[in-house]
Length: 535
Image 1 (spheres, helix red, strand yellow):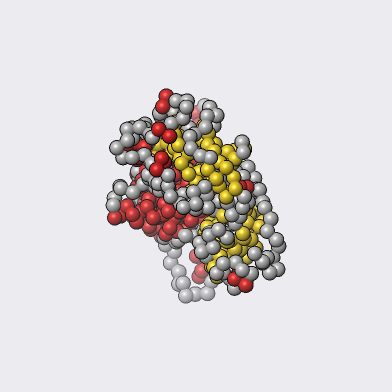
Image 2: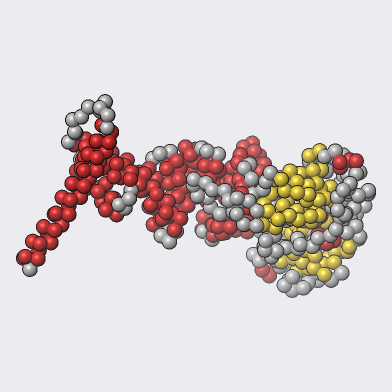
């Protein structure tokens, strides 16, 4: 193909060899809630459902037909003869390669509750790893344990070189081969470029010559720490760019403009690269990005912390049943976080809601839904989600913190102060929360004093405000409120229309405050003298 005009030549980039990130974040998970509305509780995430994949013509099966030996019949009590290995400790079948993933199933009859780690090899070199833990109902119907032995392992990006590679599978622990194969894989290199970052968006193009009419999903990766890259933007390369067809790149609808996650807006420099989301092949180009920090009038759970919270969720008895499928749910959760971080709030709430229904209602998902409403300027709706979160787990500091944020934004300072105190009790070392509470106390105090006045107890209101001034002498809001109460108790007659009336009133407020504190000082001195005389 002719090179792009005024663009650097394509080159291979090996930076995406990580195995820690989800290779195919389940975008289809966003449809779960819609499907569930039509058939409640009957829809499972796609990674869990039983699937039979036709072999693509580009691999070892030119016709695309599925060999009959790869299917377990509904009435079969055991796998077919060709699916059992010589050693009984590892049984299964490496069935095929589909959508650039090695697919099959494997398990150990002696440890049916154990999930095998599977390695995919090319000429003795490991080119993919994954766990055989996905559910297939044909395995369960055949009496093979609980049916959770499916593997779908992405092929390493370096094999997309246009050459043919023979792939085999084996149990990583025992080194025993999984029957089936070898399967021939020939991956066509993806073409594309990460051109520039402009207006907080990543711009570029991506094209797969092997699938010229398809639109690729592109991920922007932050590689500040190469051992633990994370996705900061994702979307389809489906926009038209007139220079692409001129250069022979498909129909020209292969450009992407992807908004970057707010996690990058922290004032620190970040190194960004791009890849095809399905195959993890790197696009040409990398860019440094640094932006002015974004601040909000409320607190957000960091993505890393929320993932830790989700991991901890599977250790609880009420969620333990979902632990075998934790990877699927973790990938969906990361997708939802990314959608929220790039202001796709409706889609983010849809995934969080689908997770909440699939796993069971939980405080974490409700907190994330509440955060989405806060980001959209809807504190009333956010308050409902945080109340639900607090009802599910009253000890969760983030639930109480969210309640405090929503109440404060609604001007309900007393309720907000109570929520912040509960959050601080659950996390007493949180300095940010301590500062938030100190700021709120000054706002809540006048409202608490007004409540005491409405109850007909002005002396209690005066004591409350006076104690605050003793603790924080420079709190102007408290001083003004206390002076007004003192003046209301004993008003000064004056003609407010006269020149200097305002200054006179201000001087009178200061005098009343001074007298109040002098009286306290005299009481303290008198009390001390009396105790000294008695002694």
